[in-house]
Amino acid sequence: GYKSSHALSLCQNTKMLITPANPCGGIAGIFVSRQRARITEIPSVTNSNERNILLTVPTAVAATVRTKRPFRCGARRRVREDVGGEDENESYGYNEEIAMLEIYSQSCREEALIVTAIVDDEEVQVLIFKGVSSCLSGETAVDPARSVLPERAVIKQIDRVRGPFDPSQIHYIQKGLSFQAFKETIITRS
Image 1: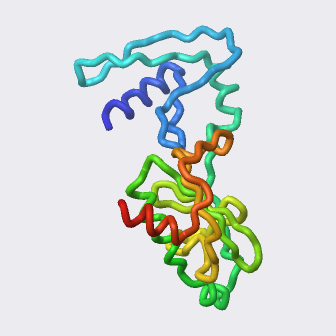
Image 2: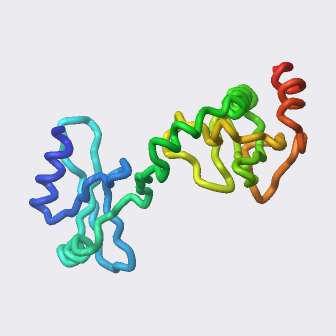
Image 3: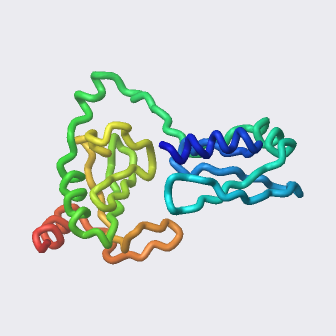
């Protein structure tokens, strides 16, 4: 709007440096470290009753800051390709037991579930918290609609732990429940 274009023209006329907003949505600004340069405050003139303070930066400092690498957001999304083909998706299926545990964890938000299951003769651990499940001992599917465990998985035991889950300090509420015992005692009560 008016303020930003006016500040930019003021910046160009008085050798100020205003950086654009960073890609992560933060506030625009400049960070000058280890510089003994003088920074002067100049009130900007706008059409509002407020007075904004703009900082002038000496030309030499501005040139060194501009040549440095621009600020970039550290978080990056990576697209992972699904390693299985169409045939694997058909045999994978939908695990209703995990879906039932996810629904339970949505209503009991102060606890997490650690589920130990057997898939193809291998033991797999899954963490379920606030309706979201994640595989602790392997990869979690990219597609959130896909079950974290295949339909053929057999749940060995369920541990109820106090949430939020902290692997360095696990506080067990109940340990070693079978799915049937969990279903009969816990899910039917809630």
